[in-house]
Image 1: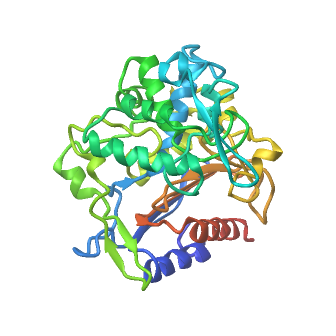
Image 2 (image 1 turned 90 degrees about the vertical axis):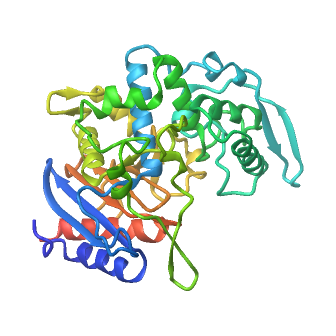
Length: 386
């Protein structure tokens, strides 16, 4: 379909590039057939370079879907169990503490009453925090510990980073609430331990190679990769876009750390192929990376009604690494799933309409709460028009 068919979406993307972001890329498939492709704005304002099919993006938390599939592969092969304790693989997690915050704000640190499980990591019900998003005691200590760790260890491994979080009291008893946090970085270490491979080597062999993803990586492989990387920008209060220069140390050759929660670089077409594979039940051409049943389990909401109140995206629940729509809104059907990244990347997979949507941008903060609902609304308004 031509851009004129996707008029509302196309107009909105042009508006974004004029008023909000430097540039972006967008791709829509239905039944595996390309319906819309757009490269807009600039991937580097200083050089005037426009994005294209070779442009690399920091996909940030879209990485979590790769890590979730890797863990589910190992579970399907019975090399890992959902109900296994994290301490079975990382002994430092055997004795964990938890923060109990009383109504008056007083905080007590106590021993956890139940073990932290693999399922808790996969579903963001571990109580492990990121170092942002809230001012609770777990987040505050996480921020301090992560800063100190990175100052003391300039080059660290995925497993060393995972052990760091065992020292920090959890935000709640494992399994009782939802908190978006660094659990996938711990899960990445467990994948390494079980598979006896680095996370990157595992993903390369069992996901990226079968799907023929030639431009997906944790680290730059060549000068060309560096040249293809989209510039990251920060939007200032006055609307100016300022280049961000300190976001790329993770990607330098020789770095040991592979962040399972957000460290992958990829192109629009590579990540869309992965999304299409999930839409098709875990198969691409003749390559099956995961059984249909496990893919379905991945995008089934696991949150209780109480835990749904912890989730910050209205009308969605959470499965294994993905949001899952649980209430129809306008033309958006129940069962649509996907995720996003902190720089504004946004993936949507719709089994009802056999639709895949992927949008890539590079801006900090990503303005996802403003941009993503509009992208989804215009996508479905264009798609559903007579």
